[in-house]
Amino acid sequence: MRLSNLAALAIGTGLSLGAFAAAQAATPAAPPVAAPLPAPLLVEPAAIDGALKGMVDSKQILGVSALVFERGKEAYFGSFGVADRENDKPMTRATIVQIFSMTKPIVGVALMKLYERGKFQLDDPLAMYLPEFANVKVYAGQDANGSPKFEAPKRPISIRDILRHTAGFTAGGGDTTPVGAIYREIDPRNYKNPLPELAAKLAQVPLAYQPGTRWLYADSVDVQACLVQKLSGVPFDEYLKLHIFKPLGMTTARYTILPTDPDRPQLAALYTRNDDGTFARQSDEEAYTFNNAAWPLKPGSFGLVATIDDYMKFARMLLGGGKLERARILRPETVKLMSTDAMPKEVTDKSWLPNKGQVGFGIDFAVRIAPPKDASESSGAVGEFFWDGAASTLFWVDPKNDIAAVLFTQMRPFDKVHLHKTFRDAVYRNDPIALAH
Image 1: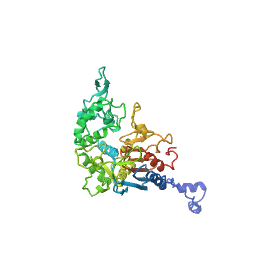
Image 2: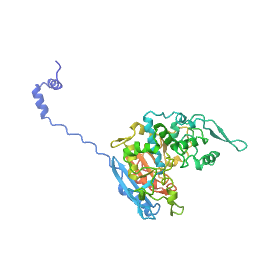
Image 3: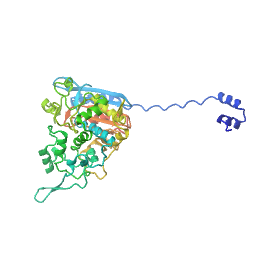
Image 4: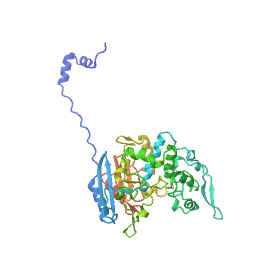
């Protein structure tokens, strides 16, 4: 018969089993090993308060709000200045802003939900699902007479291309080549064009470069929105409501905020910062042209409005690996895929992306791949992913430090006063690796 462990130990000491057990009981237990203390919190609210209030007091900005979560808890909220100077409305948590290109990451999440359902693969040709892109041509310069030349793509546009801005689409308004002129004439993003018509018209515009050879910020995310609608069979804006906004409790996020809506008074004014540092309010007709009416176009590249708390719910979902409280939006591995640098090594022409710092690009996010190289860059942790909006809004997700941050203001042109750097530097002032210095 096999002896128990205790009996075996007793035999080895020469004691009886009872004596051995009594001796064991009399031996004082080893003191418990103390659990390591958690690292101190990174966010210092007073530092962020001072940085943002200083920007308002020095009249570099009119109004700003910021919200930071760290380790699952609200670590900071602050608001300073005005959301509407002319009507003396302060910037508050209830302020609704136009998020412009911060719409894009939401659209990327919507499309990747369909990826999880096996509706497409990343390297599938785009034309498998949107056949209008099957016969696109690529601009190849001009001939001896100055006429534009076009050639066939060396490979098809892939879905991966439209996720990382390497599809070949022109930058549109700023393109001075013949392709830009064709784009402006066809006008794919006219508000009267529903998404299928946007895609059909965009497919008529020659590509500005061979797919996969450049990074150029363009209309790719509008095509993503069209794919969501096509693959799901649900109108795109309804898909966002059903599969992202409602599960996350994002009650203010939407495309249309009518003058008659109960929360319309919370909509922030949009300001242009002049070269002399003064601010001019855009007229409501100009500032709210898109959001004032239910246009046929529900774009992927811009258009949503939201409060800072609603956008933070989206950011926290990403920080939680696709989950916020009971709402599972994406799988952790999908969020990881989206937040991993997917820039091909052969792509060296990256337009203005290097201005964002030491970054690559994943799926609708810039991804930080190295610490700030010097004090001129914005602070940030390796592995963070982020994006911003035309009216100088910003958000980022930092898995390393378990931080999600959202910054709201309504100022154009885009961040000429380095508000983003000021905010980031204040958040990371206690992190010697992430701090730009």
